[in-house]
Length: 194
Image 1 (cartoon, one colour):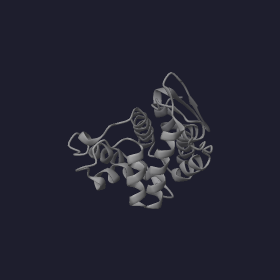
Image 2 (spheres, one colour; image 1 turned 90 degrees about the horizontal axis):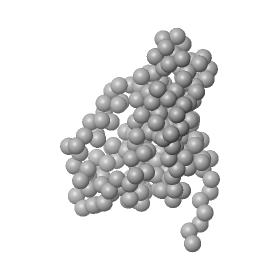
Image 3 (tube, rainbow, N blue to C red; image 1 turned 90 degrees about the vertical axis):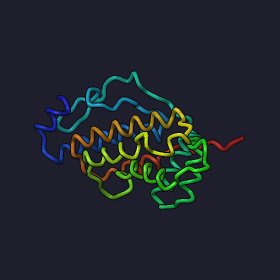
């Protein structure tokens, strides 16, 4: 059935199971296999009582292990609350083109907000969470002219906000951090640089 019908016909526990399945479907393949299904909207999903089916694999993206390692370092710096590591990892992603005048506090707030659902034991997705993310990303953000925007970053943003929009429609509340932490921990070891 569709997402709307599923939400009308199910109990909160079943919605939680579906929400966790969506999060696993996005983050496990990315960190474990370097591949991302980059079109996570409800039209590409079918719901049953204890299952979620995924459709349309025409928008799939492979990632270089080296870029994923730098992005994982960004997330891990947020988990650890290490601002210096956050700055170093952010620079390593290639996202920041002009460091002079760059507002690191605003950038950290933006990135922290994106990953906030995975930084606490449980999190509830709401429309307010999405609106705050949009507010931080508006053209008035002074950092926008200082960014290089690697293609990988665009794909990651598209998927994260698409996923989070579906989860907000569900009003999903669950231990999402556990899923991401398991996915990050299951990364294959990176080959040493030559």
